[in-house]
Length: 149
Image 1 (cartoon, helix red, strand yellow):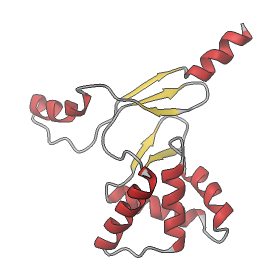
Image 2 (cartoon, rainbow, N blue to C red):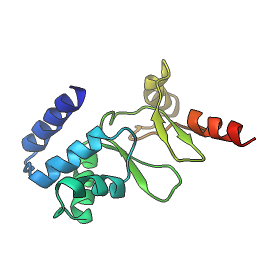
Image 3 (cartoon, rainbow, N blue to C red):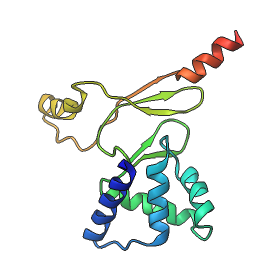
Image 4 (cartoon, one colour):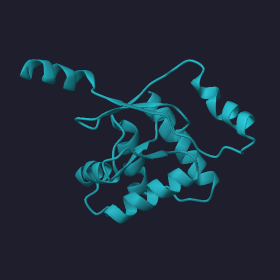
């Protein structure tokens, strides 16, 4: 149900800002929101191709750029040479990133959401963006490592 609500919310914001809701754009949005991870544009494209084979990778990138510029998608680069996208939680939040498999996991740390405001107050800066990332081995990679030993 959360995905349906978020899809409808983003569609309305697209309409309100003068963007058309094309079948391709809708497929891209649905693939992004249904992902269990933080997919790259190429991963979204592969998913969309199953439903809409005429959608181009350029259309995926343009749609993601539009959604990012509207504040409806968080774009992040985590060291693998590709951008990854989070459309479910586009506001500031920390991530844990596996250094072996590349999995990106949303994490909640109480009090961390006020960090941008605290940084602005302490520095005098007007904070526009921030990232908090933790790197290590996810549970699955830890288990694989233990089995190999």
